[in-house]
Image (tube, rainbow, N blue to C red; front, side, top):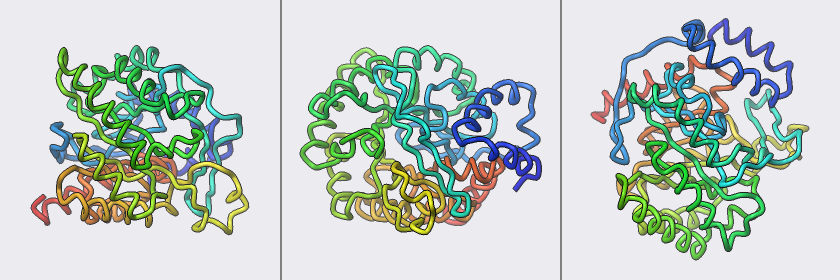
Length: 350
């Protein structure tokens, strides 16, 4: 790990996780404008890949959840991310769940969060994303992760996704449909066959209406690692059926089996980080074998090293996303993963 980031981390980890997150985001823009990111990471060659009809400059992206309101896209791009997925964004702004709602399991290199889609809402996010133009002009790919408000019943969920699409359709390069967070009551029920079929049919029809005046924007669907194997396959079949363009494997897990020894294991919310790696990679491999190339897979969950990133590619991923590994290992992990994936792709003719 970069010695400067190691020192910074030792200071940041004295604050609560949410305080540390705020400190980082509050200082990220000016730090990257001054070129200070060069102290904690390194430049590396482009290694472009085309998926979902988009050219990604490298295979390492930032997962949703870090920049919920889309205020720091260009700064994250300056750290080396080829793609940045912001959100989750809901139609109306909401505060999320009561604090504390974010917990570090340091010995396990893990995080438990029950943030609850805290964000400023789709209208303000669309305004914020005007600052992402510099990142996109350099070739960076912007994803917008959308979900439903907490107070919206599942029977009306489609309306919330459509409202987000109306506000944000032309603001990014792809849209990610979040139906897999464990922190919005009953949201994961939308992954069930009938519910998912109805939701994605409506989303596909609404995209077509929006595309009549704009280009068709790719849509990826983010699934949970806690689905049964059959549940994963059924969901994939429905995602393909309705013309979605990608799948994200996977969101956080509600399982505590890998960290049952931890005093924080009783905290509710989604578990991310190293303990998620095995199941998330298993879901990626299962999705790859089932899809047989029908859709690209964005692999997210548990990547803490370059070797982990390569393992995701070997399981069938097209690109990977970082979140918890970025927090524990620092920005240098971006370069490590990108270089390792580039070497792996070269060796395998990908």
